[in-house]
Image (cartoon, rainbow, N blue to C red; front, side, top):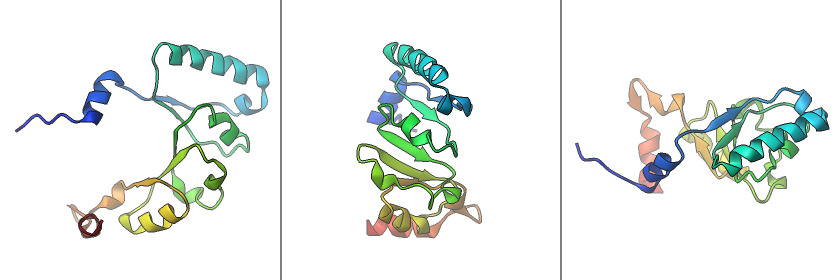
Length: 140
């Protein structure tokens, strides 16, 4: 088997992990707690941390919270949030939809402004990749 190297593989050698953060609700309402959190996070970024995933919260201040220098936001699971999030208000961020999607959802979510979708469990049908994925790839 050939050992294939690509730019993403090279990137992963440098950036080996994503830090998943699941803030408690008080971080959205308490300025002192939020500032302390951002100070700690900034220290990690200064040390070289680049990949941060912040879990979704139904708190109205969540978007303002994640608007700290985020380039990409993955909304997961999208099915419960697809109509409640107006991503077109955020011009400097690319959004990715994930969770419960199939190749059939690609056109819909692209039309809503999402740059990409993550196809997980619905990619495989009867222990084979969904034939519609092959069809889409051939046509695009």
